[in-house]
Length: 118
Image (cartoon, rainbow, N blue to C red):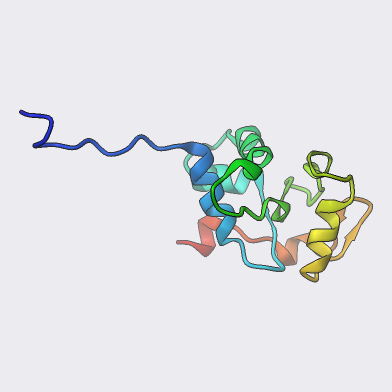
């Protein structure tokens, strides 16, 4: 078979996939590293999702990385922003209350891609 007869699909880029899911999180809602990893088929990939969020500023399109928190609603990614309060400020600008580096009403605001995108 000649190479022109069959064009293999582009290899998947996990960071790009993570960024695409993060872009789907509605304003005023939050998701978790683990929920995004699970949705993308990487059950134990929460840490890698975190690395993707740290690299979000290098993506071609805006990624609302501030909407991704840990499984308890803590702003564990906040130290990777320009200031320690930038992540909290971005969430508060969307109407999300944060107290002591944790999303208030986390369970109510949690957006799970596995159920929301099913």
